[in-house]
Length: 185
Image (cartoon, rainbow, N blue to C red; front, side):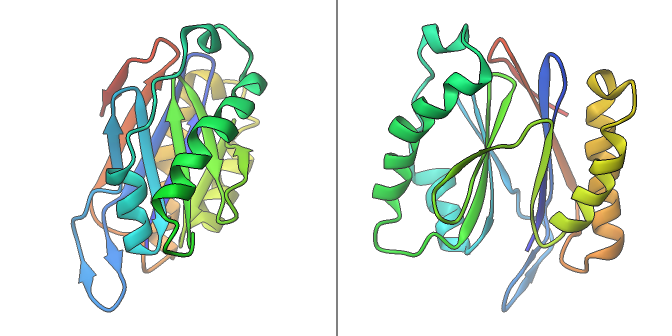
């Protein structure tokens, strides 16, 4: 399994993930975050579904008029443009995975039933998600959250790796800015 965490501040969303995989085999170094154009895609669950969601779908570029709209206006676009792509891609498999989709500083959770939920100001998926959510729940009240939310994400992944045996290995960190710019590290 894995742990993938997203935190959002005023100007960016940070997404972090470990690289350990546990199923019938243990693999210590498998990246869980994929960058595609302006998208960061993190998926936890069935490996086949994860691969399909990260590599088989070409996620569309959000239209320019949507970029100027409020976060809530994005839901309709994701439901009508992204969810059908996911549904068509995994049509022969069960959606036994959760996905964090991040673009233009916004973070969305695609659940196992293909519903779209807010992943702001934070969310976590994977085997260490409950531990990470506990760590994030307290830190969101820090007055400096919007400046330091990325540090909270890093601390939450550390908490998950300390207490969840399936969260381990190298940690990847990416930042998605409102401009669409993505920065690794």
